[in-house]
Image: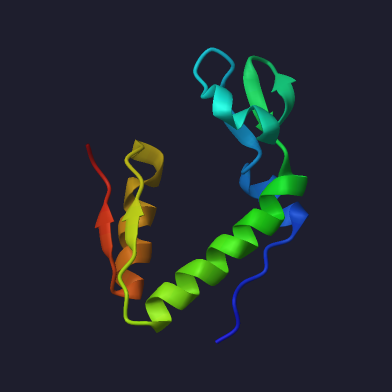
Length: 97
């Protein structure tokens, strides 16, 4: 099965570029921050896209080797989707604190 290859447009439409508020962030993320708008950091998708593809390959290799993947998403907006995706893949998940 071929790996999904998201485009820059798909990442933008999904809102992947929105980071934490400028008051709540990890300084180690500074190289990946494009800028800030309305008090929210904007993540550099030029760097995100190739790293996302590397992560997809790594997860594929882990699962192909019989390994397990833990899906984590504890925000209310994501908790149901995280559970659905993990169940669909037959993997573990944590969707609440």
